[in-house]
Image (cartoon, rainbow, N blue to C red; front, top):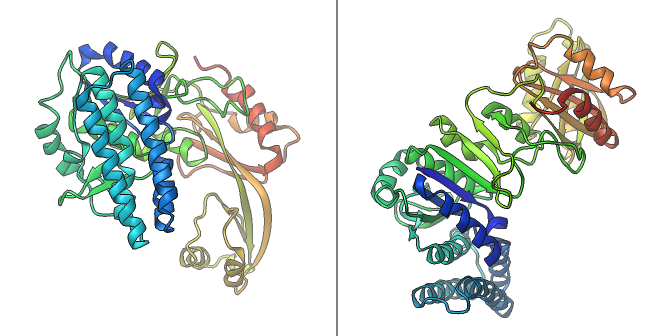
Length: 446
């Protein structure tokens, strides 16, 4: 069997749902489990309604509830040519009645707990899947009966050991060739049956968890791009889909700003040796990316990513010279202040490192100034060149610096792993640097 996950843009309206239905129908021989997100911007609408209720503005909360109800009923009517099946009509009425009760409760108490927010947010996926399952004549399964989580509402952690037997019980008997089974992404439940959510991006996570629990042949993530691209197409119009990407490469690209699915969300599938493909819903015959644990990429650099602005701090002290414990003292400050460090480069008497641009610098500098001098360089960006063969490719450094030409590189970091060569440039030169590097180093994937 295979898992097909569709995001909000793929089920935004009736026309989009029809396209998803075609893809599910084409997958019938492979016993598809379809995992859906909420329609379009429904989740944002639910959050806005909840916040209005918390503020005591029940009229605004009910107005948003009615708008959501109208959008879902419109999609249902268009899918069924104006005649919504009675069973679906009842299901939608019940779900919007549940939403109204929840919003009224929040407004009465003027309190919106994370637990209440999860109950409200879950309605987006429950609505979209009810409509879609009715349209394709598929079996509807409540994900909360399978996806067991802890009780950290809003960012619940799935309990994978419990999910497999629950999937055997509630899903496996439903899934089979010739039938579509529909369930929700993003939502789960505690052992006591309390509704939870996995946080934004949780639908990808759900799909990977279901795939791992059911020993799927493949997990397909359907979205609005033809796979993971070699660079941001808004900066490099010639960016192309990458045919094959290792899990490690995907992790590095996501960490350095590439708009790809977050690797943590697909880790259950990768650990189970199940390939994950990223595909375009409106271009099912187009190119796509396969992410797997195996190393398959061809060239020394698979893709480029960038993140900025960042701030570079250069910490200098003669106490570093032939002295032990300096770095421990230095990083103790960052740890105590809760500041994450990205890149690090060391010299005899100085250490350069990057932090996010919004880090409160004043308390950090006060602590560091007790034993070192600190130079600050703001408005910088990190460019990451990612590829499985970076370290083993002779002459790559010379090729990189030649490509950059007059663009000054202020830091270079490589060695923490073999697949990421990172450099720091002034933020205003980032786009030009990416275009030059892409042309010379990435080229056209084979």
